[in-house]
Length: 119
Length: 119
Image 1 (tube, chains in turn cyan, purple):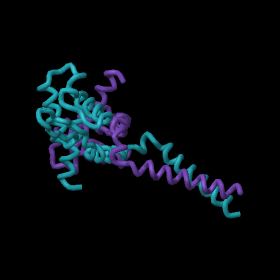
Image 2: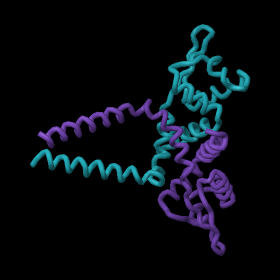
Image 3: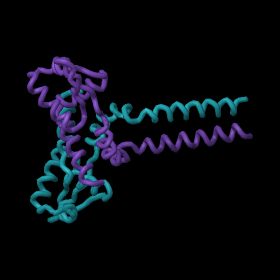
Image 4: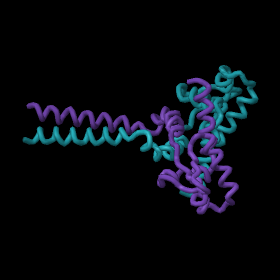
């Protein structure tokens, strides 16, 4: 892990702190592409505030923006979230010991089936 | 999802922004319990700065602190990270389509084995 990756994680988590930014990402998860005004519509904040949130998300490389004429299309760029999730995944064992047990069960089941298959 | 949970996520992600705080959590993932001075040792920052980071982590309910005599034992309290991970999990489909294929493969394999088992 180099500093580059550390900085990325800083930026990703910082972008995810704000509930409006998380809501923007959640909408972009459901829609291929949205214009800035479409994105702004459900929020009770003014367009410049939405634009600032989009700047933060863009700096964190969580969205891409492309301009066609006067319309800016915003798309999700989820790759940095993968790294954030991988970071969190190491703590998964604390709340998901059942996953290990499930894997052990599936393995035992397959071994049993294999034995049946080759009598 | 009520505001309570939204605030929790805000706090969790905000706590994870700082690399020193992430390093503290990573150390507590490997050790059952550490004293404040043990936690502070590997960092190039002063003890009061470490204490401030511990306050942020404690406010986010990511650690617990218990005092015995003059020693404060710090422990990981990973539950809030689960919620953060669940939030990120919905984006997993963007980078892990292979997981679906893997599951489909495992299912096909089991069906084939079942057929062999019951001729």
